[in-house]
Image 1 (cartoon, rainbow, N blue to C red):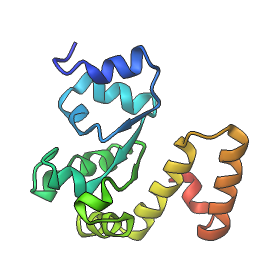
Image 2: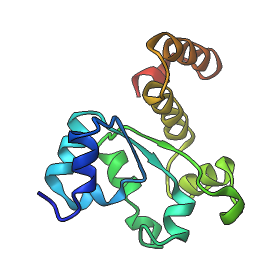
Image 3: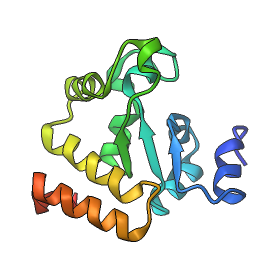
Length: 141
C-alpha cells in the first residue's frame, strides 16, 4: 500500500465515488489505475492547486494533463474563492490557458453532472438540461 493511505481508505472503507483534488494519485500507479477503472471522479481546482502548492506552479506538469490523456473522470471546480480571489470562470480560464479547449471544458461539466450527489432521476434531468444547452455530443465525451 502507498505511504499515502488516505485515498485507499476513502475507496475501501468509505466507498468514495469522488475525490476532491486527489492530484497525488498519479504518483501511485496502482491507485491511479484503480481510480481510472472504477471511474472515480476527481474535483480539480486548478487555481487553488497551484496557489496552495498542491502541484507544481509549472502548469505543463499539472496532473490535469494526465487526467485528460488517460480520459479520467474529472470536473473543474473552484476552491476558497474569498481567500484566493477566484471564481469558476477564472478556473475555466486557467485550464484553457493550460491547453483545454471549449469542448473539453464543457465535457467536464457533463462529468460533474454524471458524478454529482443526486438521485439517478435528478442526474438524468440535469443531463437532459445540459444536452439542451450544449448538445448531445458531450454525452459521449
